[in-house]
Length: 237
Image (cartoon, rainbow, N blue to C red; front, side, top):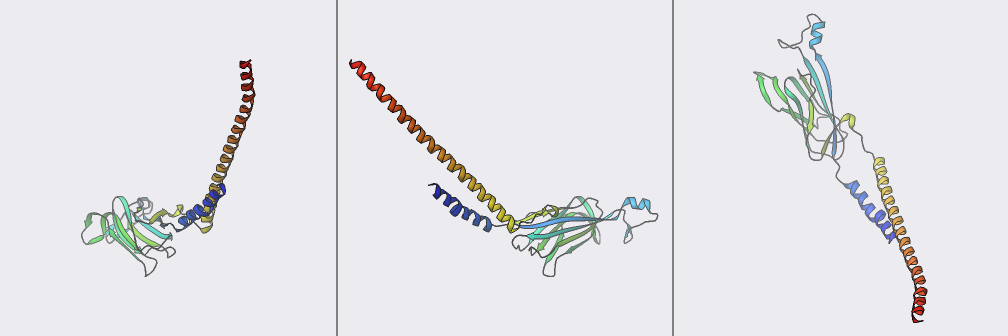
């Protein structure tokens, strides 16, 4: 029975688990990061006389540029992915420029919510963020970037809710190589081997206890029989 269990665990079930693990659907991993650049700051205006930042004829006290970079890292091909670049409050956006890895890729962004606007100046309208679509999504093809010029000192938040696509901060991404898969499989095999060893030891101990109990019972029976015969003879006498 024990050899059959070992063959089942390491030959049948083990191979099935490994095959399922290798062939199971893996998510497409997309990493992101936000790079901020200060173009105009109120403190600089107080330090440098006559410093002015103008957009047209309008003076600007604060101006920040944010570059949102998304990079497909690993996983299967995906036709498209949708993500949001949002702020906690409505801000002025003075300019937005989507950048795709190549002419074969597409990246477009639409305003999420417009709470107020300046007539004939759509670029300076107040907004809470943008809804962007990127396609196609394939690991190793390069980065998608959205560059924003705003009056918000707060960095934007990046969100994505797509089936089969996982959004991960760039500094938290750890690619999984084949050696890591093999190492994980060895851990699984070691765990199965440990469980099998424990089961074998438990079975052997149980068998030893059973035989010991049988020997004790036989020994007790052998001591009881002469005593019972002696008691019978005593009663007859």
